[in-house]
Length: 234
Image (cartoon, rainbow, N blue to C red; front, side):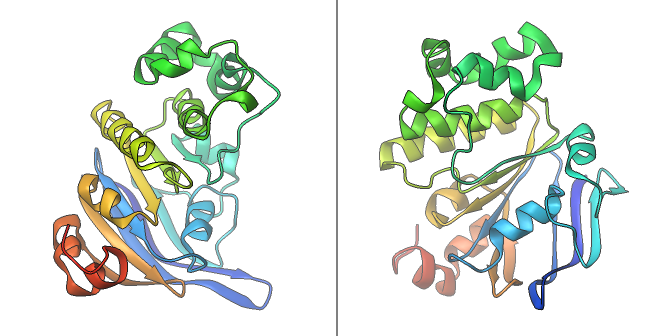
């Protein structure tokens, strides 16, 4: 069953067209990885799906309903959230305050569930978010989004700037989030890690989908191996 379907999505910013007819679908309970180099349109795609940018044309169907062009707060209310690139947390607030901003209306039960997923945040519960390590800040960014009980979560470069050990930790947590029933779109430059946990994937270049298929097929594709996997199969 498809929970998110992007159809022929175009995005224009000023005179420049950023996205050129992007299409893909996310299965319920699945992980779809979006791969590509810097500046090819991956983050613009995420921002368009989440309502930060308004598309020029195309459809974005969430559970069968077209949400393209809706304001972001309405899209959030329908169950689609984005954990943005760059760990955009409230650094002067505590871990607890950041979580409550994410979803105070869901109460202590939801907070407990999120902290069970991210026990290190429980240990830092009353600590200022700005004093956390880079990996802990990334966990907080994801945890804050989960406080709203999303059905679809967009993760934009969750491994950016992290050590290999922390990258493994973050991707283990992404698997656990999927097991909790959340469907995910994962934007990543770390193609090797992303393809290991995704069901399907696409490569974007110049605002267009240039390759799409199962994660296993893309991981074995010589073009992907050469461009993203260091010249040898994963």
